[in-house]
Length: 451
Ligand SMILES: Cc1cc2nc3c(=O)[nH]c(=O)nc-3n(C[C@H](O)[C@H](O)[C@H](O)COP(=O)(O)OP(=O)(O)OC[C@H]3O[C@@H](n4cnc5c(N)ncnc54)[C@H](O)[C@@H]3O)c2cc1C
Figure (tube, rainbow, N blue to C red):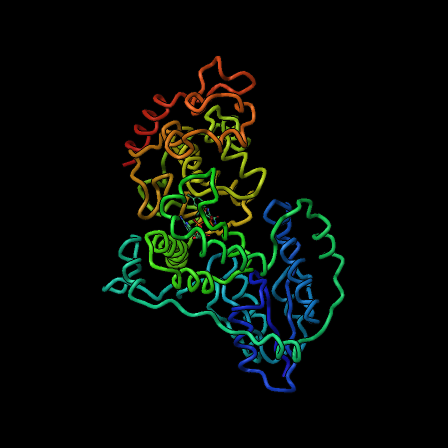
């Protein structure tokens, strides 16, 4: 039998549900082939996340080559063309995507295959199926805390073992790289550190051994490595969510450990919401805010994107995003609040900017996070709780270490003044583009009008 494993965002050998399953099904004389579908449409424009994605893929192909396993890349711009190039096969295996537009892509491939091929679509990117938990009346949860309580009653799934030696025996060997893939590899300009499974596992182990216990306190301080920084690995599938959950839950009980598991459940919650309530990339969960009167101010939006708002913590955060492709969670909340409340710019513009720039972009978490900060989502922050960026800065970057790292114009400003420098301390740094008090009042009024 010819069994094909379709890799997408699951660039790893260990704890990979698809690989575990194909090995379970395969017998001695079966062929297993690994494929990847390169759709040139998804590579334009080539953003930071593409750079990271293809650098990760290249690393994975190297890891496979070390095991003498090939990954065949099929270049196609439609499901039909992809299926045609797959050739004769008996079974197609892949780890399910549940969120649009990828679920639709997978559906289209199944349709194009017709009924003769066995399709094995598996839960892998998440701990639980999107419909695993419902309220007593059978409807989906809309609030995180009761959802979390329901999840806590379940044991999360354990990692799947993958017999790599056996895989080596059955899997096809090297494949030629198509020019289109070489071109994407050539477009990767950044030098990413710590790519691949080994580096990811090392980071996980280091976090569990040294930092998870203090996670609850440290996670809000952007100047220190208080969070796990595993999100890019989870995004590209270099690390499995089951492996992360198991490693953390095996650690000694602490508030940090429990808080961390709760964060993994936010990821589960937002993806469940996206699946149960389709279309949230374009509309707010809360209908009340469908017609909120957003400001159309391209100049201010551009300044926010570049990190030139005159609010040091906002600018440092945006520069971190632009320079590294990642932003600390506390800062994501601060800049999203600033864009949607202080500048009253539509959350969708911010969501799309993050999509372009983040190497850990997950539609569900990003849309969930943006709608939360803009007060238009499910279980969102109430609209009248508007973050004061200066107070947030004083609280979470008390001595200004993080600001100084990215807003170098303020390197010499002292720890007290740095959060909102006086005009005399702004030499070489921008004036604030809005006044906090006036912006706050305008936002309150606009949101009230929408009630
Ligand atoms: C406006 C906004 C946009 C966001 N966009 C994304 C995104 O595109 N991709 C993304 O993975 N996360 C997103 N988040 C959630 C969170 O900021 C990141 O998951 C986190 O900063 C990643 O860093 P870490 O791995 O060090 O997190 P840790 O604090 O170590 O958390 C561990 C893991 O838990 C999950 N997690 C943590 N917090 C959240 C959360 N609030 N929502 C959902 N999952 C969470 C992530 O998978 C993360 O890797 C967003 C949050 C906001 C407020």
